[in-house]
Amino acid sequence: MAMVDLKDFSLSELERELPQISAEKFRAKQIFSWIYQKGVFDFDRMTNLPAELRNKLKDKFFIIGFKLVKKSISRDQTQKLLMGLDDGNLIESVIIPADDRVTGCVSSQAGCKYACGFCASGASGFKRNLTCGEMMEQVLLIKCNSEGNKLTHIVFMGTGEPLDNYDNVLKVIRIINSKESLNIGQRRITISTCGLVPQIRKLAKEGLQVELSVSLHAADDLTRSRIMPINKKISIKRTDRGIKRIHQRYQ
Ligand code: SF4
Image (tube, rainbow, N blue to C red; front, side):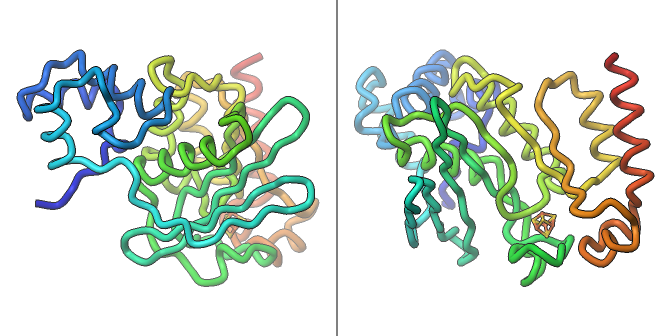
């Protein structure tokens, strides 16, 4: 039987899942606390769970699945983690410490289909969307590799276009924002996009308070289309109009 990534589950989903292995619903909160609050990724160390349940969890679920391929640390203490996924794809996460904050930069896809001229991620094309669990694993590895296990901000600015993996990215945001998990405030979470206006409009209706960062890289359509092919479909004017409408709605 294929092992299941436990980090693919929101708390309510895990509460619904546990009875299938004859475990009480309330155990889900305990498991969340071990993984996300205490940074314990080994079921055997979850000492308030009965031994029988720990064995059942070990038979069905895994918590950490990546291989850390390379860790680079720059002089300003920014760390880059290169990680191998089980299908051989590689992704990167970055830890950026600055003053009293530590920002984790998370990848949302393996590869990217938008082929921006300045970006290495798009050069080899799109491979696949990352799962919720694969993004949660980056968040956990960022946290446990940062000094003092500190993680205050998250930016979806690694490999991939986060709004092209909309449902999984939003699920991750809701999990890391929840008080049973990492409790990172929504305003400390940024989605960086090349400007997918239909998804930006959809995001505006979600009732989230996350930050949005739109990469323009040029002030006119001719230059931007040369650098960012997405501009041929969604021009600066359309991007600007879309964002202005959202601003008006919230003023
Ligand atoms: S959308 Fe983002 S990840 Fe994709 S090619 Fe452009 S800058 Fe790179």
